[in-house]
Length: 77
Image (cartoon, rainbow, N blue to C red):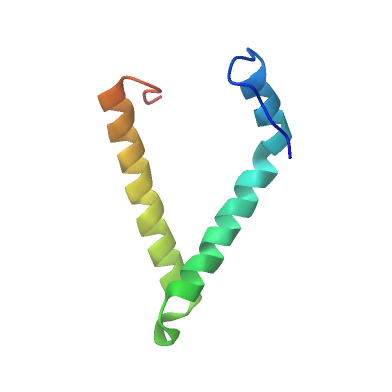
């Protein structure tokens, strides 16, 4: 398991290089799968999973924008 020191000025870049976009893709696919499993059997279809995943992602992005504003970090571009 890779470890990155918090006081390493290159730590964030090293972590970004290690994970890359493939890690994000894997996590999203896993979340879609979890959403499918969490739905009752009668709602387990692609349209319902898409609806629920989009709803959750939109809510998370709204929270991210609100939190960034509240803490004065990130900002929107």
